[in-house]
Length: 218
Image (tube, rainbow, N blue to C red):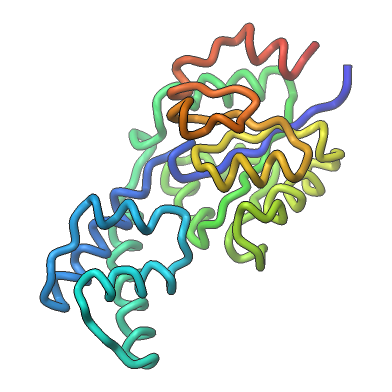
């Protein structure tokens, strides 16, 4: 048996903080005098903070100076953090704890591989931080997925070769990053969208312990 490890993305995999980003962007749009809908918000998925702002401003046909952009980004992030600081363990997505418990029982180490700069805070809020062998977040990486940098750093934290790492991801760019890194990619979400993944499940409740056993232990 080869020693294996697991890398989890955060948003859409362990918790769903996308709704809080939407509420914070919506509040910003309201303050600038235009409507920002959930369909507009789809355009921001997997996009950097500054690029998200540019898309939002284009939606409302609003122009801001660079200084004003920085001010509204700080305001948006403050709003977002206000929501995050109210999170609790009840926001862990269904089935996740079953998988983490299985990994702990079988002494399989796991790390976080997320673009979020608030990943540590979020994991602490939902009482999972102490369970992770390591954290790689937006403060540790310079390149966004599909660049594999975040997962390759994760593999180093696990002291494993990339091919012995299994990644859980909900985004196309994340699945692509895992495949570029030569890792096994497990998609969480829509099979048609995440078709490049090695396996796809709607959510963690669909993942059986037998599947994990085949993947990680044998």
